Length: 289
Image (cartoon, rainbow, N blue to C red; front, side):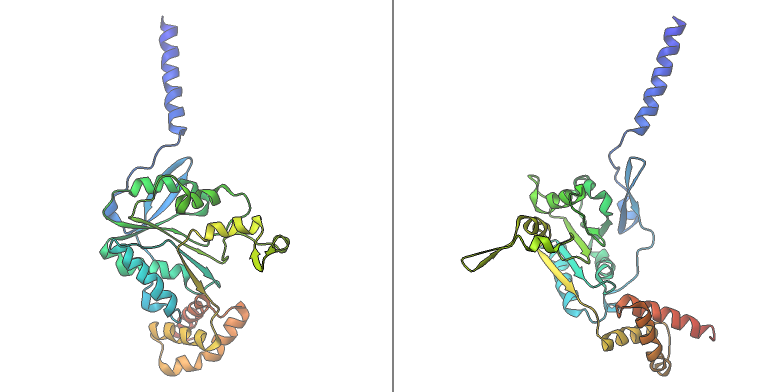
């Protein structure tokens, strides 16, 4: 009898350990604790991790992208007002403000109920679970996927495609997906695939491989493209940030040539490079360098 009791105790302990290893549904966070959250998966457990200090970039800090800013700002305001709005794909040159623009929208409209949940590409399979978690909440949620791109046959590709427009279950009206990518169609495109294009009665019909790749990006209702900055635009952004960092007008003019050399070394005249140069230059100037 004692052996039987001992066996049962050991079995219960084993079951407890196994239960700890099984994946569990994410618990609701304290929604009042933050306006931005990170979806995190660790050791089979998932949770929404509050972001204590979201990026403080403002819409007015983003220079020479006025058209892009106006389009996504209008879409976001429609969303907040409960009107029809689109999922957004921001594509184009690196460092031109795609991610910063999404973060700036949160800072501009968090007091109107906007919330941001950042989801890594590797966790896109969890999108249905995230949607279920926020469904029915009074806040308006942007699910943010940064620097998104896929290789062929990745399961996350189909998961995103399904949530955007391909599932039987409709996405609640308090959820939109904003994604950034350097690829217009989110997947690599090869020369051989263009050879599959056919001409029928004067019309161009892409091959099946290209059609499949386009089908994901087409599920985003709003495409916003970003382009490399000209030299003058780059210098304007440098001057803006140097002024923000307390540098005098005379010193800003003196920094122009060094700013151009900085961009040449980095191989890019982007907003990110301009901001990085301004931080470096202002830091050295304040130290008397």
